[in-house]
Image (cartoon, rainbow, N blue to C red; front, top):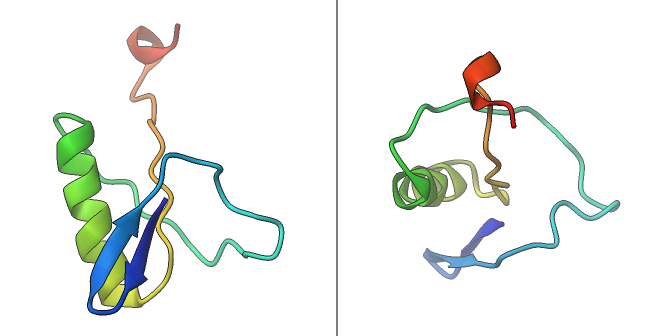
Length: 65
């Protein structure tokens, strides 16, 4: 979870969204790796002022284990 905090962001490795939080929308951004995804989450959290949850997303059958 990437959360805006005092002009920056904090990152935690789970737990994911708590029941008191609400899903207000989502972005699907194709990234090369987790580092790039977290960089985008940082920008998005600062832009919208809300927590951003980062999860992998399967493109197609080849990505499903």
